[in-house]
Amino acid sequence: MAGQALRGWTRCFHPAPAAETRLIAFPHAGGSASAYRSLSAALSPTVEVHTAQYPGRQDRMDEPVIDDLHVLAERLVDVVAAIPKPFALFGHSMGAILAFEIARRLEARGLVPAALFVSARRGPDIFKERSHHLADDDTFLAEVSRLGGTDASIFDDPDIRALALPALRGDYKAVETYRYRPGPDVTCPIVALAGDSDPVLELPDAENWREHTTGTFEMDVFQGGHFFVDANLDAVAARILGKLTVSP
Image 1 (spheres, rainbow, N blue to C red):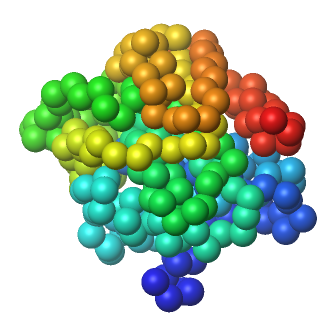
Image 2 (spheres, one colour):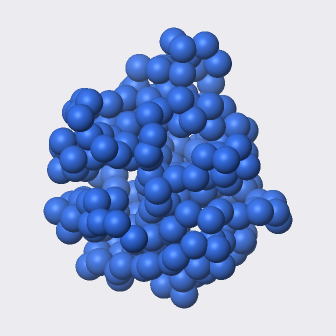
């Protein structure tokens, strides 16, 4: 990718040139870069956050949604590789799988992240049949709203509904059709984060992440549902800072 194309894939809300570490963050299904604005502020200036902006939303609304996580990882690996080192990866829900797949590709190039934070997502090789992306609009949006990250009333506005549906459906398709491909996993430390009342994540499934690194594994459980990070922002930020600023 050319330099301009690389820059188009990420947003940095709180530039911190003196930061010793960068955190590249990957949003949940239907999410955009702005989902991490608060986390970016909480980590700045110690850690500079670069957030992926997927096609098909906000200022990339005119671009087609990428509905295959392996394809999306291939598009983003050059973007991450161009960010100054050292860096760590953070992904929430869909973003956790994407971060993992990017980490695998980076390590194949000899680029090892300082840590991989996987939030609100089961391990990559645990497959559970889901087909929400094929449901009718009302059923699909009810499932999206059930997770608690979106106020269901916003979908009452037909214009917002029309704008949101393509990215949501495309991302859900990407998640629901993802299949883990056996092969080298990662050597970097993995930190799994989970909410204790997440309606779509069983804690033993989050523990599965330990099987996908030859490095250290840690898991922290917070009070809250699928979007527990919002209610535990300071604690999550402290956990990230603690991992990235303390020598192993």
